[in-house]
Length: 589
Image 1 (cartoon, rainbow, N blue to C red):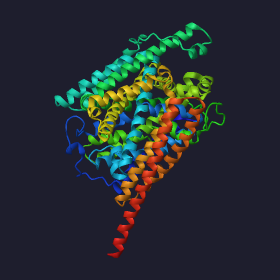
Image 2 (image 1 turned 90 degrees about the vertical axis):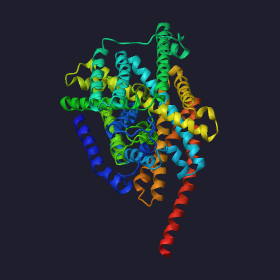
Image 3 (image 1 turned 120 degrees about the vertical axis):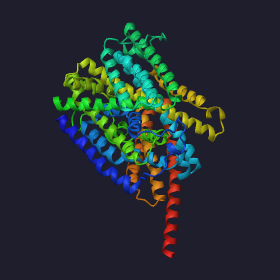
Image 4 (image 1 turned 30 degrees about the vertical axis):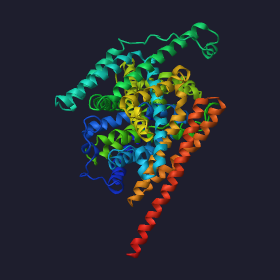
């Protein structure tokens, strides 16, 4: 199979979806109003509510949602073959994910920048709001834990990426100051920052940094067993645990600072620079594919799955969480992006366009892992990597990074530099997601503090501390961070469940506004069926493998889902009754 065909078909579908379907949704369903006063103007405070240029906001939104997930999910899912992953990424993005992201941004803007969790109160009911907030808390807990583990592992595997990643944070602070305190334009400072980043990437190969083992862990029994009793090999694994723990602690210390800073100082400029970086990355991957046309070695549909691999249905739809549709996107859209939207019509570019951008990233992940990585590892190496579900799950980012390195080398970029470049891309977006997600979790904790009259966590410093500590404990609680990717199936299920419930809220609001709701009801019904089915399979697997912590998490989330659906059913009856009453009054008139 030609990788060029896959790239051209996918990108053409995304462009068509934006030009045709998004206009229909914007004009006929959401009915965007350029004269509507957005929350960014109504509540402007210079910290969270900041009217923002649509290109800058697109950069923030795009890079906040396009973290490591649209790379990792497809990198795992191609074990089932490239065709199911490709179809779900393309069709799911156009008809489900982009509609969801656009909708959550729009409905939050129409409700004074309130989060999708808070909106549940007015649309479904008081109890539903608390249930939704708890569900969001669990999701953010897993998002932050998983992404911290991914970043830590990438730092350990790619020490040349450490200096560029941390250096880019300092550069972003300078860009933020130039834009908002000196009146400098937006484009030139961000392009200058991008140039500095690439210089750091080039020199990163000569300035690698590995964190020393500051913990001094002893080998565990499991590590000794895996090493076949070899004490030296087991000691190396224990040392890696110490390094991983150190990186996770440093990352959460950083996110504490980043999440309490004003959005203009770090979050916006870093996201804008990363947005340029992502476009460059997509351009490099696309050019590499067009010049080299690497053959896709993976089967279209894998009929010879490893013994430990589950069937693709329904797990494909929760393994590729971000990259097709993601509940986390709704948290970003209604949590931070709606508070920065300068004009309501910008929601189409930011929400729908951002989702398609992430879909494009997921598409390149499929190509990098089925074609570029095949060249890197060889046909036998590729089949060995995807020879078990455990290996595919643990090595998703490695397959992408090495695959991009090979593809980029096809257009003259040295393979070692290209590999560092790919690692920096993944780490930068994952770290940006961490910044945003910790900030969102602070909002959720503060809201729960108000709900239950716990005044201490209503303070942003205390709420951020609770968020950072809880996420850090989860990340470190699974085999010193080494088992962090075991959270992925539960994260994916919860993420898609939240997307389905967010679509339900949008649908109820559209029905109250007497507007067509089928564009949100259809993907909502599909997601709720798939996630419920997948949750049952997850709970069965957690129980069978004695993963008690994940079993408890999954059971709690499942209970919240069922309760929320009952509350939503009652709300749906009320909406229908209201519609019948209005129809009756119209007839009598």
